[in-house]
Length: 185
Image (cartoon, rainbow, N blue to C red):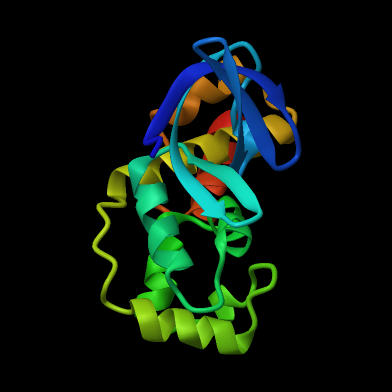
């Protein structure tokens, strides 16, 4: 089993990256491939998905993300190809909170997750996820905040200057509003 791969990102596609380590290029399916940069070193925590007709690597930026993924794919009817978009578009804390509060509306916003599967996720995982997600949420929100501000046309230097003044405990929406206020000063 491959626990993680540390190497240089050589290719970025819409749902995977290729990381070169030891002169071997590993194709790893990731939730948000554009959070990586070509030519930069990265550590990707991996899950080996092995079936009769398939051998795939799924990758994560943090151990917390990988742990949540492993819990999700143990839910009946939820495979890796359905769990990855959940991690790509939702925060770890948001997913755990939705499960614990039985918020099927939040869970059904993810692709291919219907009402029946959302209820199954809640039934199987409510109260069973003990992931220290505080640090992961802060990292994910910071990266997400930077991406949002870059997409709005702000420069990297300006964004880095105001990041320390943005309250990391707030939701991403509140962080964006706060960052925009700081950038407009």
